[in-house]
Image 1 (cartoon, one colour):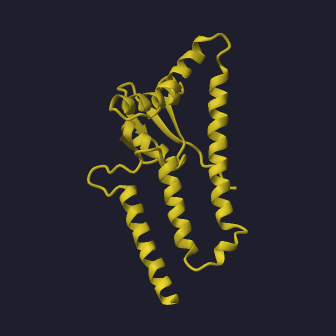
Image 2 (cartoon, one colour; image 1 turned 90 degrees about the vertical axis):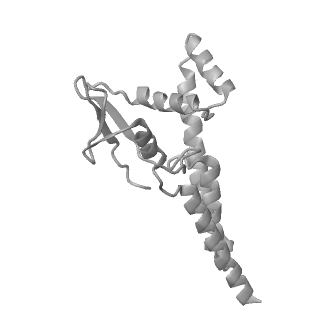
Image 3 (tube, helix red, strand yellow; image 1 turned 45 degrees about the vertical axis):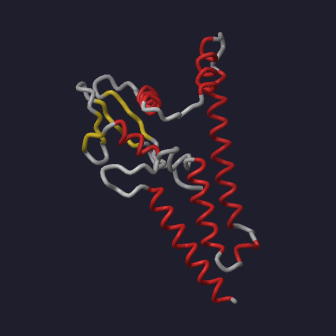
Length: 185
């Protein structure tokens, strides 16, 4: 099992600026969203009071994505969330969502593990390329849940996006696989 990495500590100053304690520089909400898409846990605390503001900022990130027209959550899920908090004893929804995401991550992890361990297909030439393609496909379809959400591969400041890199990597692997198959004939 992978060792647990401590959360990235972000301090909020009175000026509302967010400070990354690891790199000693200021960050934006989009930077924090990027850390989370990369699989990093973050903790945002108010420098003066010590209050944990993580939940508030994560909700703000979701709200900003929604306001830009990105459908982060379907309307019926948002309605159910609001409805669950309006009902007495509605504290069941957070545990349900947590359990659902935990199961999704576990299933994704088991599926990737099953692709490699005790798989007779692993002996077939080109299996590694096919496995890499499936991993890229799963990452794109599920958003990685640990490495990213839908839209995580969007390019920033002229950088090539992860999606473009994945696509070129898949094309390269496909060409290698085709080359190997043509040599087998």
